[in-house]
Length: 317
Ligand SMILES: NC(=O)c1ccc[n+]([C@@H]2O[C@H](COP(=O)([O-])OP(=O)(O)OC[C@H]3O[C@@H](n4cnc5c(N)ncnc54)[C@H](OP(=O)(O)O)[C@@H]3O)[C@@H](O)[C@H]2O)c1
Image 1 (spheres, rainbow, N blue to C red):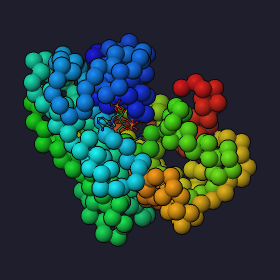
Image 2 (tube, helix red, strand yellow):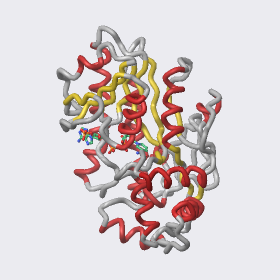
Image 3 (cartoon, rainbow, N blue to C red):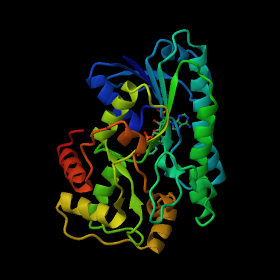
């Protein structure tokens, strides 16, 4: 199979590219950086038609993962970048698919579980029509992040690509031990004794182990009956307190200093990030995957954490 990954140089893209490459697929990453990887990297700018479109012509699957990081301060300039990189890349990938003579069978486009409302005691599957964009009980920055996902999916849905199946990947926290990943950052905190719960620790974290993530993507490629939004998450979310406790246990660290809400808000300013990334309760259910009979390997966060810490220590991604 030929698989093209626009924006595939980042965390999710590297997990997918490695998986497809290892099983013998032909992988092409579209990137602004000319990097030496085990797979081909073809230049593009994420918004303009160009020679890169030839890669899409004849590809079997396209997975667009482009998007400027949300792990930043939401200044007007950063908001524009966060939104436009997602909408522009979606539009131009749609244009490439339309102009291809041999169209891909499947186009998966990144989205995020951040589309859902702040979950207080309820969980959301793909049939939920409410989004966090309209949740006036939450701060404006939280609504902005949800609204980006909403607009991103609207643009994706509007792209008319006859003959190509479309899936919006509502990814939750993808856990992989790679350098620079969220897991890598969290383990760093735990080892410094800073791995206590954050906020009141009761907010939910929806997550997915990288082994399940790539297996779920394989299922989405194979099962031609699936289209539309798909939640990529373990069957049940974990509370922040339990998540941090299991991380400490897996890393063999006895204690962890908790970070109350006010400390998160202040440190977010110095770390140039936004507190919602830690304080919002994300509680999703993998409705589509479960209906399709997906066989999860990691349903319990403790066993996922032990596997990830072992691989992190071995530097064996
Ligand atoms: N990681 C997660 O757990 C997670 C969870 C939910 C949703 N998502 C979504 O899934 C997608 C991939 O996530 P990720 O963690 O792999 O993100 P990432 O590591 O930040 O990678 C995103 C890619 O987007 C490209 N990009 C960034 N700024 C750009 C710009 N101004 N113009 C064109 N391209 C730009 C970059 O490619 P180049 O620099 O190579 O051009 C980069 O490799 C993102 O859209 C993210 O919002 C991720």
